[in-house]
Length: 402
Image (cartoon, rainbow, N blue to C red; front, side):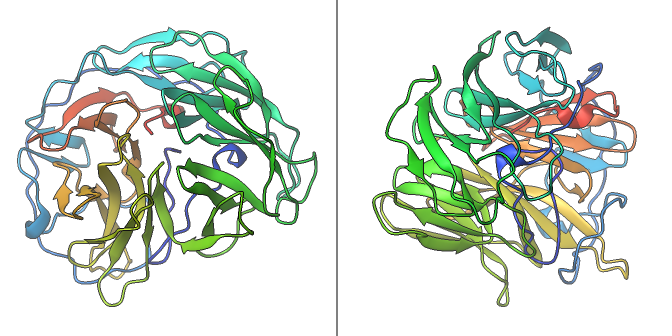
């Protein structure tokens, strides 16, 4: 997941498909101590949702959703926090990717990746990460040449080459991924790409497919391929669940916020309250997640086992400037019950990214404030966050959290 999340209208479009976005271009800087500062106090509930305005100061939390133990302000998450798990490490992109241990600040160069001035993109796949050099400048909606793809295991010190592709997506099982390739300079919106499922060792795991024109694979599921538009379009993107054995283009999903091997989550328009729908692809059961108050979902991510759905939830502040506040909520995918992640009420520009980068159900968020960048972790049911502070710098956005 990229670290900077878009906002817009009441239902923002998801980001471009993974391999077609331009990656951050340099390494993270020095990690410092865990923050333990006085706690901020909650304020009043905002009255209604409005369009986003980035770059504002953190807001007061509504009393109905205030979390105990920690709060956030201009100086970051404050109050009581838990120690960061010493075994948790995160990849850092940029021209020379490294592993980072937030608990200590130790870094280790990731081998097997030649220096690249465009930086590297990391896509979470089962058992590790698919790593690809950033897209080269091209002709807008035209495809560039295929680029090398590598696989980096969760505990690996060296990334291994997998193949060449324009775009990469998670496979339906650990140890596989999908490589999608367009002809060089092809019009992304009008060209049918070739897609090949491969193992992380680069061996074919099935026949090569021809995708419907104008689409790439966002996520392989146990019940088909979730396809995303290959070229950026105005308004919410329409994704399609396509069975390669059936006719294109497949069942449409507008406003997709998250997808996993067995689930798809999307946000329908608010009428009158905002909700997120979660479809269990194995059973066909649909669960509704009712969002709190006057809020809307901007983005989401399923936990590795699909049991939880993390949501970036936006609230309107009530001022004339249309300012948004943000918090992280986690929903049970089975019941739809929503839990506030403690200490994550902040202005919309402070949440730089979030996801589940470890094999366990540990949610990681990158939080960018005036004086520091923080990395927070939380496991469902925990009373507080674990927080490590990172000295702010121009390259902090290359931290990969999901």
